[in-house]
Length: 101
Image (tube, rainbow, N blue to C red; front, side, top):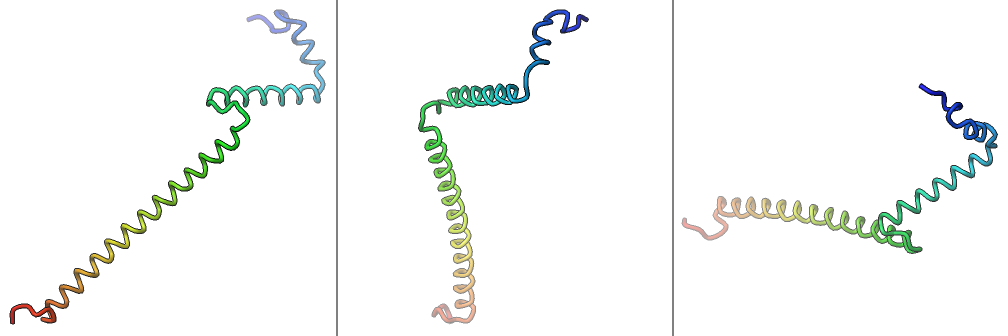
């Protein structure tokens, strides 16, 4: 295998001479470009990306609330139905409904 210094001596020399501040700035710039490309890929490159994401989160929260409410309502309806059947059964058993005597 060849040594990277033999292949690109100037590149290795430039990396060694890079100051920490320059390296940090390079990383920040690369991260910003990557984030911009990611947002553009998702179709959120315009200035309204934050608002769009906030709206999506609000919509997701509303969906979760609706699902939770539907589940609670289902439990209440089933519980009320069971109690109603038990009450009618007790009334028939105690002959309070005017059934055959």
